[in-house]
Length: 444
Image (tube, rainbow, N blue to C red; front, side, top):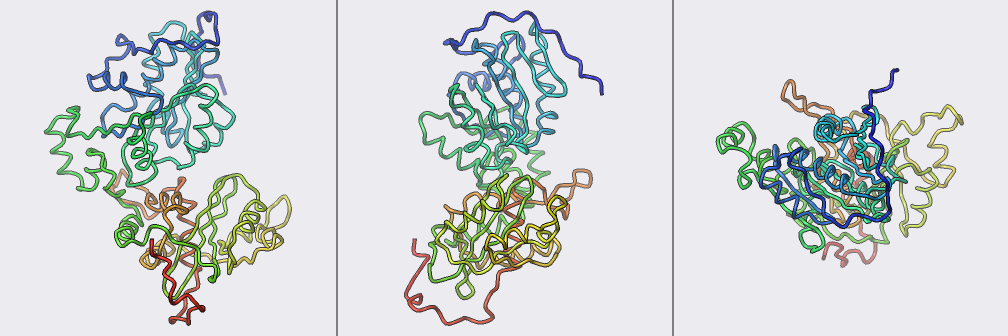
């Protein structure tokens, strides 16, 4: 395969480790920001969360912020990143902008295959996808943009990107449109209360970027929910088509999502989605009568089965069953053993579920949620995934597909389906264990 064409770099200037003290200025000869954007460039702090409507010009704004800061940085091998939910998305949305706005700079070098641009001072700006966020481990950033953070896994920022900024005191800019009350909403609300962060919302009816006639036409063509989310930057609007969002919202209104203590006198059932090379998700549940208490959630990536066995052993719970999908019985080519064999050898009492359709599992989960009390703290990441779990949208036919989107939400959602299918519920109200009749676990 022939190598992608590159532009030859001009001789690099002498580098120094001392960072520039002069604030980066956006070169209006390369980029003509709108007045709102120009003011925003001046207002940014080290950490920033910007909630902006569609067609605000988010990507152009971010790319030029990266270019300006990279061009002004005189540190050796300065590194900047633009991270989108998917690498293909980063390429489709941002790559042409990055090339366009750096093209007038003499001596720029770029790679079409690796999606990076090197400036004459040695600073590099590169595009990444959060779908393979673990690839970022071991790197560093002087500055990073996380675009459409609502669609990324909640672990991308605290576990992967934030440590990459530590040794260079790098900055971060989160920008995107809401997708319900998920981790992007939580981050925005935290940033709004923190004086060291800059947090700002840009609804389309306030920015003046789009003409009023265009907004009226969009409002007519879209559902009220979709318009509120896409143009008014509403976190309260649920994600269109999300399987469980309305049921979880109802659970929240009824006070069934909050603090749900573990009851030591009840056994715990776990349900797993066991990933190979990606995340493994585990829900922890207890049953009392017809009530299902979701007391805990755990997710990790790239860990061996022994890691999960130890995790379960370290918790104070007494277990009933560990529910796993049917494909756990498939033998591995390298060892001839199944993961079921491995888990049982680690001392786990595994119950393997029969194969079933995703649609039936989703319906079972929908039927289960009205009986659930869910711990908001311990299950926060799992709840974020359930709220965003949604079908694919067929843009050509303008309808939702029967197939769910496969992204970071899939692992928690699949494990939740297995819990709904495999959890054993009593046919009638059993006698309560001694002392439970006067115990109210939901009095938070």
